[in-house]
Image 1 (tube, rainbow, N blue to C red):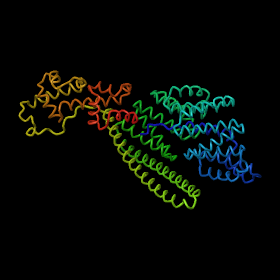
Image 2: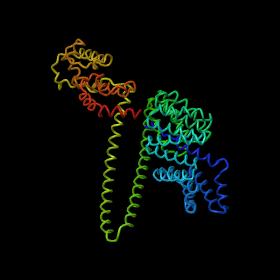
Image 3: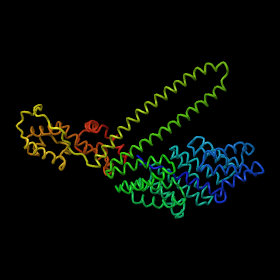
Image 4: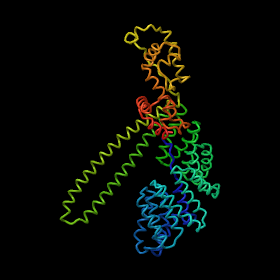
Length: 539
């Protein structure tokens, strides 16, 4: 819940690099618009339109599209020129900002090919770097690393330190996303000294070094690097970079169990996200606040933020799902139209009938898939919630034997004729709890009722009676429950991550893996492997 990190370095570095090439100090949108009105020829207009759309791509996509459409109307007479190459680059950047990665990829690829043909080395570097941004966003990190490494020779030729920093940082981030922090650190260490102490590149690399240290459990360094980037991000008005820095700090304090500090920084993230209408970051802030307040044992406030997180998170998910369905519908309608144009009159009727059945099949399949997805999501969420609650019990109090809340009716008990007195029973009960809670005798794999009775120096029948009446359980179930609860504690403990589940089962006294799995599922509601993996995600 809000414990994952969004990687923002790639696009931010690329955008800084791009703005350097157009001399952002002298280019202002208003002045460009005035120049556009007085431009004497189409080539001048295209230069101005490319620069305007590039600036609008950074913060107003509707305006960017407006000027890209104007460029598209003029570009046909300038095919194969740098003006077309720049137009393709701006168009790719527009689609990338929208999150439409396929058309973005196509435009960046065309831009790179044209730049290579025209021997425009800087433009080729920018286009190729943008292409690998797309690969990274699509999860193709190995391909991105391979292609980025091919640019090292080119960037050495260009002798541009900022491009060098951009390239090496992007390689490092892809290694980080592959969960290879050592490889990522090697590239970050190369470029970190090359950045200005108060410059954007220092802030961007610092926030990602903070993330790297978080992954490796070095939370003090996480705080150090993240705090280094905060004032720079504020000064440069880089909101997303600032939120990433503050989130890193909050998460590190949470891991250090300094929950008040975690609340302080998550609250800052929440306020900034609200002000800038950044719903994804706002949802993450709610989730982090829920966890931090739970750490402070303020469960009422934690519950409130948990509800706010769930509501906003579900809203974001539904919006994304709606967008995907809409895109699929548009794609389907386009393909359908193209097919109709190509079909002959004689075949059109037959094809139309097939299309109707295809549409019906798609709709039925889609509805069925959505229903399955919803049920799976609810079921998976319920299991994860079960794991989370059990983890909270482990972290807050640990597991102990639980006596029945109501006394057993002795007239209905099978021990109604027993000679065991209440005073003796309480004494025996105290011995039993001491042996279980303090001495943890249940961890012995060969423990039996007889051996436990001998250890406690009591009658085995009386011991069985106490277990049955006080815990409403037989001896085996009673011991298995304590062993399972101990296993649950070990499975979420980082110190035991190197031990297999079968090894954990032996540590808590089980001699059979299948017996352990069955007992764990019966008592905890989920399998040991699901509990272990889900606990990692939750943490």
